[in-house]
Amino acid sequence: MAENKKVVKGTSLWKDAWKRLLKNKLAVFGMIVIAFMVVAVIIGPPIIYWTTGFTPDYIPSDSKLIKSFPPSLQHPMGTDEAGRDLLSRVLQGGRISLMVGIISTLVSLIVGVSYGAIAGYMGGRIDNVMMRIVDILYAIPYILIVIVLMAAFGGENTPDWIAAISNLFGGGAGLNQIFLLFFALGLVSWLTMARVVRGQILSLKNQEFVLAAQATGVSTMKIIFKHLVPNALGPVIVYATLTIPSVMLTEAFLSFLGIGVQAPYASWGSLCADGIKNIAIYPWQLIFPGVTMALTLFSLNFLGDGIRDALDPQTRKF
Image 1 (tube, rainbow, N blue to C red):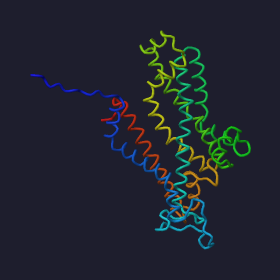
Image 2 (spheres, helix red, strand yellow; image 1 turned 45 degrees about the vertical axis):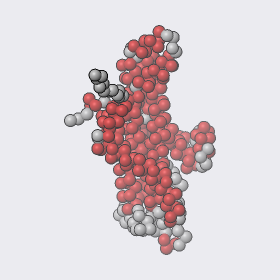
Image 3 (tube, rainbow, N blue to C red; image 1 turned 90 degrees about the vertical axis):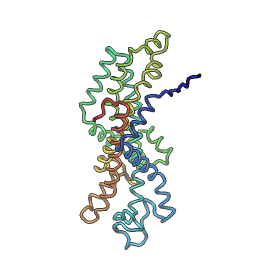
Image 4 (cartoon, helix red, strand yellow; image 1 turned 90 degrees about the horizontal axis):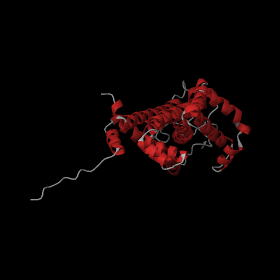
């Protein structure tokens, strides 16, 4: 009689990590909230315009309406002091805040991964010099660097290449400021990323697959970016997920100080800055943008912690 043989399907690191991630209730909650928030900020403003005619910058022509109204069926989050629908402005601000977090994190990924991978693989004096530069930059408060960059290159001093990118999306002083903010935040967010990647490369560069690539004459850059970096993606993904809320919080702080996102654009930080002025009279102007931003940041942190635990189950707390 033929024996019944059960075929055991193989699995992978990413499949196992996905299963562990789905068992983390806080991470799943964060994933759902982030997905909902992304969909809401993309399709929310058009839907509000089609159903009510309100846009983020629409000011009622009736002078009697030029004041802030509390939440109602017509305005679920109320209005600001100019009579503009706060729900539309919060969703528009979410676009800017999420874009700042994601694009600035991508900039830090590109710079940090490249810098850390090259330093870790080259080793010796090159590694020593490159990491001492990182140490020097670490000694300078990063928020001070961002403020100096925004003050030095903002307004009429915007670099031509930033203005050229901004012109592809319509241009204007406000948009120039947003793209400058992307660049400035990304420029100071790569330092820890470089250290994380360097540590991973140091642990991988003497593995057999690297030695085999060296023996077959593969170039240094191909070894770094084709063989080493893909094998170090786990910690990179985790840190990138945790960098997004950090960058968003920094942007909110800068906008709160008045040197971040400028009118006619708005972010959650600038909306909170406007709301704090009227908190005693119109508290909803601060509550709704603040709660939306806090919920998003908490969700991103929950998701980042969940991904970290899923990719490295030994770090889980029991």
